[in-house]
Each structure stands twice: as C-alpha cells, then as structure tokens.
Length: 223
Image 1 (cartoon, one colour):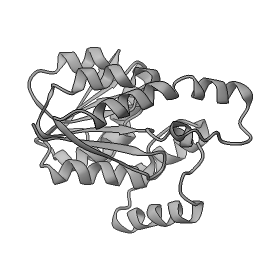
Image 2 (cartoon, rainbow, N blue to C red):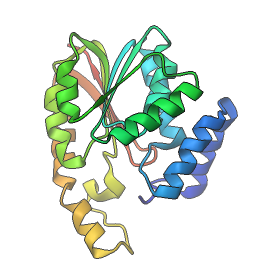
Image 3 (cartoon, rainbow, N blue to C red):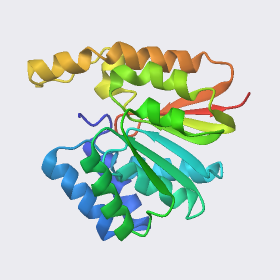
C-alpha cells in the first residue's frame, strides 16, 4: 500500500499515538503484520477508530473482517468490559491468535469471535448496533453497506477502511507494482467507488472520508 500522506507526516501521526498509548502486545501484533505482510489498519487509524466509537458512546460494535484482532483491540478499549465487539473472519487460526493477543492485553472480555462469512456473522447479531466497521474483501463493500445501513441506530456509525485505495478511486495508479497486483486491485476499485457514492447520496447518513493511511470513510446515521 502506498501512503497517501508523505511518509514523514504518516510517521508523525503514528508517533503521536505511541506517545498516548504504548502496549507491548500491540507492538507484537504490528510485528506479526510486518513479518507476514498481513494488512492491519496501523496505529493512527486504530486510534481514530477508538476515538469515533468513544465519541458516540458505543457499546455494540460489529466488525466485518477482523483478521487476528488488531482493530478489535481499539474497539474493545472504546466499549469497555461491559460492551460488545463481535469479530468476524473466515480463518479459525486468526480467531485463536486474536484471543491470545487480546487476553494478554486485558481486552478479551467484550469480544466475541465468529468464524465464517462476515455478512452471515452480522446477520447472527440481533438488535440495533452502534458501530459497523467494514474491512472485508473490497469487492464485497457494496454488499456490506447494504447489510449494515439499516442495522445502525440513529447516531450510529458505519466505518470503512481502504476507501481511497492507493488513490485508484481518483484515477491514480501507483507506480512500480507488479502487473498482477495492479490488475487485482484495479478490478475492485469500482466496488469501492460504488459503495462510497451510495453512502454519500443516502439522506439518512452524513459522511466524509478522512485521508489517513488508505482512507477511512465515516458515515453517521442521522435519520
């Protein structure tokens, strides 16, 4: 992923988060991501997700795509032990890793991990939600929005990562990528754009895109 901000600015944002919050478990999770080239949101976005959830007093969060629990780490901090963070991922190994990391961080209490399809997991959760966070395969973004839009309470948030997609949504193409990687990423750009435009035109929501890391969409339900 090509940083949209200059690397120096991106590094500055990360250092600010580190100054506010340090945790060896979090560092280990980031080291795993670096070693395995596993996509995580990183500290600047993670702290932003926590901030958004805290700002609306969130107690019920569903993640569509959770990996081994990096974003859940931040949401669990926001909702507290009496809240609920429902994680979804197709890989049972990720569920085991998430439990290990989050237990050690003292953040496992609010977490429930559903192994399987993300939208099927969302359907298993009853009632209104405070936050739905989307980080699944990008061709699934329009379907994720369709499934989540009615589930959020008025005052709730739909949050979605990677909505700038290395600038591809604006017609930019990163240089130096292998052809197969470029083709794969370009093939799902239309899905990201379609979801973002649908949200932008939905009168029930007020939305904006924050251009940190790869772009985070924030949509607040107002009606």
